[in-house]
Length: 89
Image (cartoon, rainbow, N blue to C red):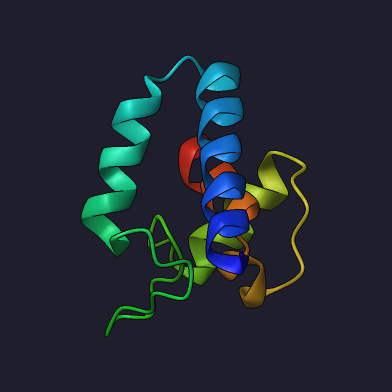
């Protein structure tokens, strides 16, 4: 059940962010697949986090400049936040 809810949250975030920014949702899904194979807990050896593999400094910068919610590095493990930051970037 948790897996299905997580996937539903990811699909919802992809659709809403792609519409907001004018991107093809399939492109966003392809990037997520390549970067993290849809694992929201992904952590690269260089420190990139989450679905779209966003670096903490980039996440903070993009969030600050675009008035997005930022609760620190852990924000990048939240599916919606990671996709929002990644697509905005």
